[in-house]
Length: 616
Ligand code: M6R
Image (cartoon, rainbow, N blue to C red):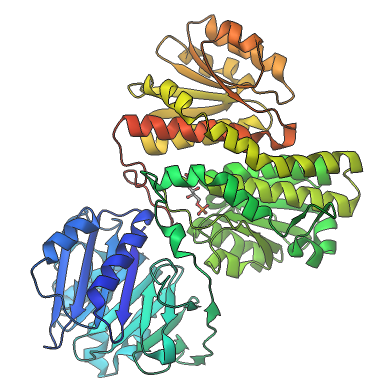
């Protein structure tokens, strides 16, 4: 999704803006642009289609001086990805320039109204309409810019985060938000302000960050205190948080892609996720959200999980863990479907929002609705201070560090690890998990990072298998029980980064339809590591082999029966059934990664995809 960066202060803005855009590249985009305001009082705007480096080439050798500026990466919604539609946009008078993230739903009608008042448009975007409306409001009512922004935004229906500068105010950026994230970093003594869609472009400059709330406008003027007000012009207290963002986590750490680093970082980040929570010496699991809401959780009518994509797959695993160890009924819903289904939800329900970015618009709207209806909202989120984290009543951060690659990897294992800890801790409180099981799962959780490492050490074996599949058009993924969500996740990983069509199914469902697809051109990935239904999955495998299907099997180390019938076998360590996904997903991630690399594709920023999906 689009990314916004802004700077006002005493340093040159351009390098800060470009560095910020690079840090936001992971969100996915198709064009980029930058505007600076130099000492001559003139705006300089550069735009380019494609990567931020293209923008740098455009600006090279040209004047981009100034200590005030805004910049943007655009993920097309209204209008094709071309230079005309790239941001920043310039107002009719040439005085105002704006960057926008989000969608304006009534842009069509506003465009008509402004056209009838003599406004012309240089782009096809809803963002330019918004800018012209702001300028029109200012000129008509002769108000200051902040009041004009406020008045204009009242006429706008949709989602937005904006940053706006005015040629006549060389030290000020005005920002506003509704349903789209925006962070403001505050420099020492308010000497400078950093604006960004998330905290990553701000990291390394300041730790003091304010996350703007919906329907708020902020005036960031260097050397002056930050002013935040709501849409009724009421001043809002500035609540700056100290956010510790590890800058070293924002690079590839010696790997060729962020995705590779994130896959290989999993042993370390899962230890981090469990640190201070899995208390080895005391054999206790401490999650403050569980102790703080013990009665709400134990006494819940049911749990409902809302999420999207990979986080939805993790929720399917969470359901099995919680039902097994806590005996609480769990429903899992796509956030986008839940939101618009007039769901039966209310007091006594606990709604879990699972999200890596914490900014997914569908998930955020789903929990807003559930909250209005009286449910308790429990966030399982990675991005600290994100919108979903703030909208939740309580929750657990997965603490796996920033995930930059568009394909989610370490967030999935982090979410699964949190679900395992949560189910065990709550099951113990509720008395639904016996001591022997508790101890067995607890000990195995401690071993999981080492076991993941042993799979990662075999990455080259998986790469050798992957090389034969780069030319395939379709792949089927099959698994049962705990491995069914892993089959879905394996298929999602492959399709997102290799553009190979892939489907995940519960293995037993194959005979109810997908078996018709099986022939020598249909590779089938079987998750056949021991997971309670080994004999049954072996029968499913035989059904594929006897129809000429090409099987890749994930098996438990030491398995001999699968090896007798399949050539391409990936061995993983044994574990207890409930933690199987934490191991079996690793070969799925590596398989997808190596296939995409073999195809020479842009693994970290696959086409059409955005990391943080901030539109519904
Ligand atoms: O940030 P979230 O976990 O809320 O994101 C949800 C999905 O957009 C995300 O998992 C998406 O499916 C990934 N590209 C999967 O790799």
